[in-house]
Image (tube, rainbow, N blue to C red):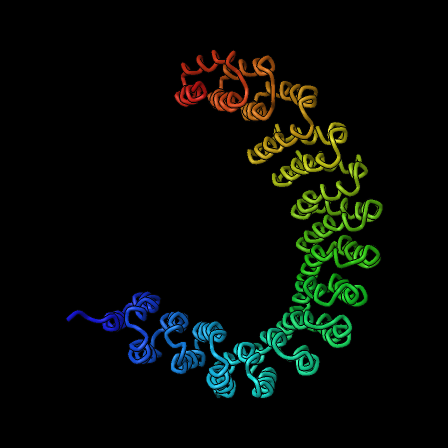
Amino acid sequence: MEPSALDLFKEEMSSDETYIKVNCIHRLRTIATVMGPDAVRTQLLPFLSSLLHEEEEVLFALAEALGSIFPFFQNNPASLLSSLETLAALDETVVREQAVKTLNSISSSLSDADVSNLLIPIVLKLANAENFSARISACSLFTAAYPRAGALKEKLRSKFFELSHEDTPMVRRAAVIEVGRFAKVIEKNFVLSDVITDFKQLAQDEQEQVRILCLDSLIDAAKLLTKDENKLHVLPIVLILGDDKSWKVRYHFAIKYHALAEALGKDINESSLVQIIVQLLKDNEADVKCAALKSVQTSYSVFTKERIQSLLIPAIDAIVQDASLPPKVKNNCAEAISEMASYVGKDTASSRLTPMVMSLINDENYEVKLSMIKGLHKLAEVIGAEIISPNLCGILSTLSKDVPQWRIRESVIIACVDITKFLGDEIFTRSLQDIFFNFLTDTVSEVRLTGIIKLGELVRILGDDWVNAELYPKLQDIYHQKNSVIRITVLHALAKLNLTVDQLSTMVYFAAKDNVANVRLVLCKVMKEIGAKNDISTLKNVLQELCKDTDKDVRYFALAALR
């Protein structure tokens, strides 16, 4: 007689290898389908219930897999829910959380009678358990049970808020995580009474982690209330959290500022919240300042122009002028200034932001310089040609060639092109062209490669007239440098241009006779690239000669170009 599906399942579950048992449980739905509904209820589930002594990995897989066989218990889910209840009360966190997740998942498929007679008793039993792990699990089940609780709603509400104030910190943390979601399913009058009262106590809890989590749930609750209700009930709690004694709470407040401002609305933000973010910008903790600056970058849309000018700009300027701050703060400051320009307009950006830009671009720390250089094009878009002052050009010229950090030199090259997109060819030719051309002779290949890529963009912006008048003569001028790397860079640059055969021929003939094999090799590659878009058949003889080159790699690429 062949062994049954259950026998095979039991055999694998008796293995000493954990991974075999886990993989076996992952096939539970298939096994249940083979066995049929009756055998699943009478044979399989009792066996599964005997596995609660197994390793954590096995129990986690079981908590997940029990949800997959719920359809077999649709008409009588008591035994399945009982097994999940047991798993939800265990000490292992991942097992407990997965059991709760499965219970929440199948709760929507339960009938009203099953919710009242089975699910709610499970929730209350877990909530009243001596084991704090069970009470933690209970906190996450109230939201699923409440909407269909009927006469038991009051009992559920009372028990939930009792858990949020109990002595065990871990239970309070679990409750405060859920209170925002719980507020979405209870009646509005209880949000204004019970939930708000709960938040007032949680916002002053002795555990800083509880206060941090309180802010997240408070945002969810604020979305359910009107502007006047938020001003009356939620704002006082927000003010307490924004001025918390713990820097970690203030740090979290700064991170969540934008979400909080959107939940409370523009009027409350303008009248009260903006004052908090300004205080956080002045905070003694550098991490709090950093988080506040990050939030400010994404929150300009919720401030009026007047508030930005009167409150935010002075606070950010104070950070720029403070030489004692670590680079990470000024780094975020540079990003915040770049984003601010489009919200304050040309006049304010020119008169109040430009001095800060110059200060940061002259900062001793290279990461601060880098951040400010990367944001220059955003300022140029708003301010216009006025931003390209002789002072700024002088700084950029120095940074493009005389600083040891190649990433700064690269960022200057990129900035020149990005600025040109907004200011046009006249500004580029007059002020930025010589700075940009420094990439051709840079000692770092990454800078030269970036310059060649950006050169392609520049050619599309400025057109062939600029190529013929400015770029091509420059390439001819520097080609005969002793450094072969520069000659190779020039050849790569040629591939980005739309030159005539006559223009190409001079440098092609020189390169074909170069003493350095790498130059000749690059010429073959470049000619292949140019030949794919232009007719250079008159230069075919150059490639034919290179097919006889003494270097085998040159011969290979010359043949490839001819094909």
